Image 1 (cartoon, rainbow over the protein chains, first blue to last red):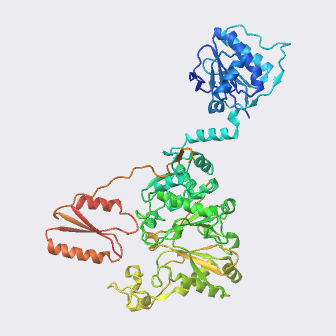
Image 2 (image 1 turned 120 degrees about the horizontal axis):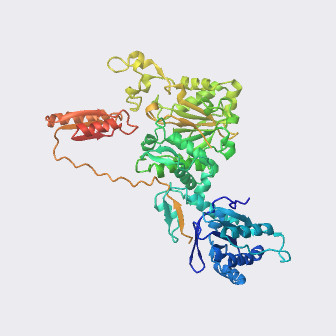
Image 3 (image 1 turned 60 degrees about the horizontal axis):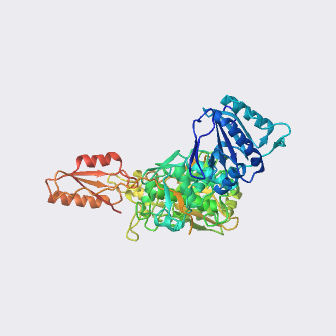
Length: 545
Length: 95
């Protein structure tokens, strides 16, 4: 669909040069009217039209018509056209086709007649007698001169002839022009990688990577990534700890490119960034702690299938681009935008492999329960991310339990080891139940509440056994012991010592989701970070596209 | 090897702020702040420090302060209080 400016529209300005380097500019027109003729050397319709334009130039330039040719050609080809038709008006070279693209025509020749205010008087593409006649007449009127007879009976010219495709529409050119236009809207600083530097080594040397090679975020790639969301690139999504630096959609997109994301993953990365940068999640603490935790991203809702997030077999493992790159993108956002780097603010003693990337979806279809996001207040049809500050997944192996009560006991006994068996009330845990284990719960009609209650029941232990002693000097600190179990001297009472405490302070500290392959009576749990509300709490956010 | 490549800067583009240590006082005068970052048993260590300071430098005022939690940066009010009231400060990590 041609966007050639119609009569009444304002013709775009331009500044080009001839093959000799002489400037040819079109701003406010000089003289009474300006005629632009766009052409290319390998177009027969152009060769049909250019002699007529030359005659018009000869006839009307003394009266004030300015004719300018714009060639979509290399200098030598343009020179051939000029000499073949003895053109005496200036011919500018549109080497990058940017001016052609600005004029929006589909075919050459394209003719535009504009008045002194750049308002278009006439315009057309290809060759038709009525258009040539009309343009000639209007040019003559504008110059207050006699119209030359360019077309007449018996001139041997066809009634009409379609033009040839504008070079601005060649796929490569169109792509390049789109990048150039879009790139002007991007605000990030440009970094020039010298021709003799390997881009991957350059980026690693700049400390922009996570130890694995990153994809160079070129303008073209970042623009493609930004097409994954409808939000403006300049929107600020969050202030990213530790430096509390503003993360714009553009900066997140740049890091998503580096991580290897596809554009359709970007909304998930943005929502994860937003969720992680809340006070409740406390990303600064999650990053700075010597403990193991890192953001674990759980995706719920229809977007899982739409972008191919793995929820099944090997859900925490390798081999799935969406999982691998979304988690990695969040880590790069923290590193590059927030400035959180290992050895700097990130002081984790041992870290864990999930600090490269950790993202999975819930296998809602295999669950007998409400999915995680519905439990946390969202509609089933809404897509969400939940970020949880978690350790690496740990195994819950139970192939023998045939009842939910027994299976729940196994899960509780494993969860009891979280952080330390004698440490109770130490924050949240993420329990990932596999499809085979779900089958047992489904058969018995065991609800999530039943499962949580069973876990709390089997983990309950008298306070006496949880306090530090000679056998094991680790244990619950007195400040973590409920005040009701302490006497006026601040020490546990006898009744307090006999009181049984469950592993989790609140049942809701146990986050339950379903994921994994169809075979294997293996579930998993991820321990959280200590201190509940003053540490880090899971945060769920809707994914907006 | 390849054409010169232009990439977009993935960082926040803010030059790091250079911070220098405040000048060390040659002697302790006025008020000494002792800030407990609220890590377990930090108070045990700081109590001992306070006892030694009171014993050896009785003329020094000692101001005990405490972060609400070690998991988050100091609240601005606490930082302001240290800056306004103390000529020197001791902060300690513990576990």
